[in-house]
Length: 314
Length: 79
Image (cartoon, rainbow over all chains, first blue to last red; front, side, top):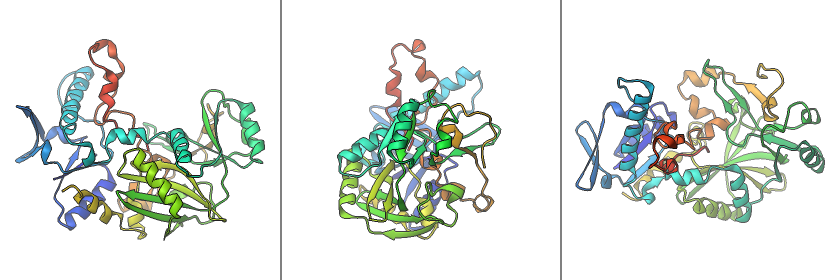
């Protein structure tokens, strides 16, 4: 059985589950934000079983787990906040206990592998060591070091968030921080000292590439921005971006495969910038990155590769 | 569109931009599929426990026998 471990609001999970149903792949979707209402977990005599109504799923019956951004367990019980937290954590630990019985090789991806692959700076270090070309990078809180870097790069410097570029506010007003060009006027217009900040040389790229890897499958899609060589092609919800499946250079693909394997990932989405002389520069890898939009844009059928991957251990 | 704020608290915050809703994308129910912004690619719950809240894991005083770090071994990642 395929277990889809996700959240009730995840659109990518909706998309792939619909596809799975359309081709007759059996699966169980477990939305962790709602599961406490209808799931039962029992452990007895060394065997752990998760039940959903009449369907009993011993841990050993799970052939593959697709981990797609599950959220914290939500419980609906009486009590004060501390008591509700306690119940939620007990629920979560029961789920952990169940899931921990499923061998690592059956996960796409195993959560701890995702964690290990989720740090931009370490990604750059490892990618460089494995043969990928990475942009010159500086993380600093020192204005003097930033200015020296900026001069060394002839002013072609970008800044981007280390963790997330999304600011969500309770009142519903959200904002984003995209990869942004650092002009001279930016250097002193905000304090650098309070927080480490990531700077990179601005790559003279002619297009971006999103490389999606699912087990042995590697699919490269060029993202041609409306003005060509956009610092961040994701602006404006990628409106007017043109997609094109392209061949990845063998040396890049080889290094990327080794990078992904080194993290123990079966799925990953990596970003590159390609220059006019066909140099591929590695930006980052997203072990739980988005991919379904490429299918919806008509560029790919990545869902089919997921189906194959799900059936690899069936 | 710039965020409505005064002097940014940190360097990177000077590049903060208000998010403009994409009515077409929302309307067809594919919002998260069509948006590939950083926050969408990044799994922002990455460093939290897989399905847990985080409060008790940062307070070891109440659970001296529990190693709070162990509770995160199944954590999902940011990116």
